[in-house]
Image (cartoon, rainbow, N blue to C red; front, side):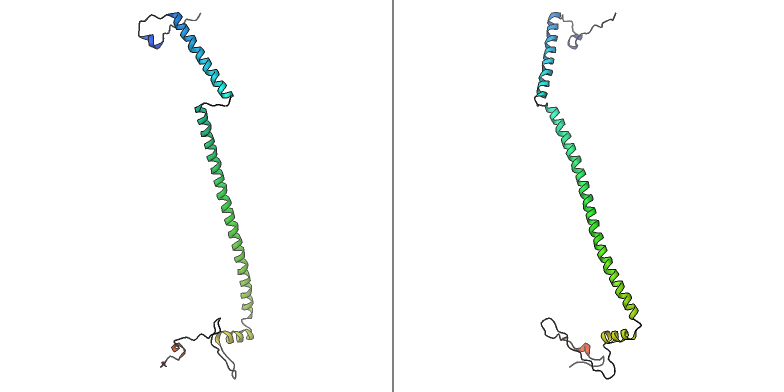
Length: 167
């Protein structure tokens, strides 16, 4: 039926030694029994919870990879949350600034409406330019600080008209 090839082991390939078939069969059976026993012992170790060193290293490597992936995801989520929080805070600040600017705009609009009124012009002339009506007396009091002492400049030459010098 099938033609079997004659095979010789590598160690006897180039030699002319005579092989004892009974002894060779016994050795082969012994090696097969050892392989089966080794496999059974390996299965027993796996059942009892012991892992081979290679499998343990592989499992630890997988755990490390999963840990790194989860850590990376958490880092990305943390940065995103920080950015959202920063934008929310900036939005609140801009809202407050916008509200203040709207109030300022309303005040300026009211002032613009009063600009052409004679009462407003007179008030501004009195306050900013220190103008008085004929017959009125303007009293200028020295500036005082919080202790009540008056603030007097040391050099009064800036108060004199341009041609006069102080002694």
